[in-house]
Image 1 (tube, helix red, strand yellow):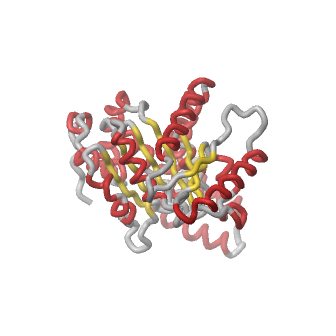
Image 2 (cartoon, rainbow, N blue to C red):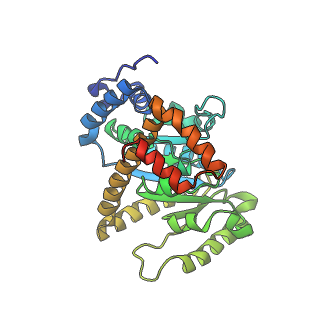
Image 3 (cartoon, rainbow, N blue to C red):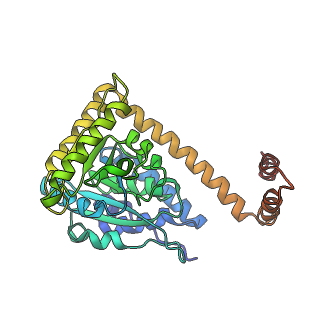
Length: 325
């Protein structure tokens, strides 16, 4: 693999989108030399990070995430913001790369000078969040984007990961909340800071209002008494571009409330610690894959556990011993 040339810090700080794209490609690389260069780049960029509004967006397939993000992003650009979208796509089963559908569906943001859209492969990461989404988010902030929207694949995995790297977790829902709230897990609703019923326009308007009422009822049970924040349930339409101002006002109210109670700072600190341990776990797994002695022994241990010749605990102990733990 050819080593990538890092973008200049000056180009990144100036908000050069090509430089930002190269920087994210660098942090996504698994090449040791690229990883070292990425670490230097990130360390130099840290002083310009932390000020952006970070919003995670999830929802079942077909809920209209990309359409809403395109409309919301255009709305925010109109208000003077610079918007970065990290759209975490399902990985290609053949190449492991990203399927670029989300970028093509965000037609306005894809060409706007004040926006940056980056599809990334999920690569099987928990919750559909790409392994390098955290670094990509920081690079977007260092490049001057003051709003970062992280869109997850939304295919039913645990979405804890996206809630753990953003400030506000937005769950999008469809009109007609039957079938146990459309199959959206109770755990995802419990993580939501805002719920927005999308496609609340035209003939779907009445069903959207009924769905919103169902979610408000559910939240009365799920939100503990005395909680500092009760998630609002809003009606929006990405296609008709309605409710966008109210949606962003909800994001701003949530941030203000979190800053008032001190939860904002505590949340960011927890995220940094979680990020550190996630990287430690990733490096241990990388070592298992890269060292010839470990690579040779691992299939034998897995086969023994699968055939019940070795208990999972004994298998884990042997792997730990191979790592010198």
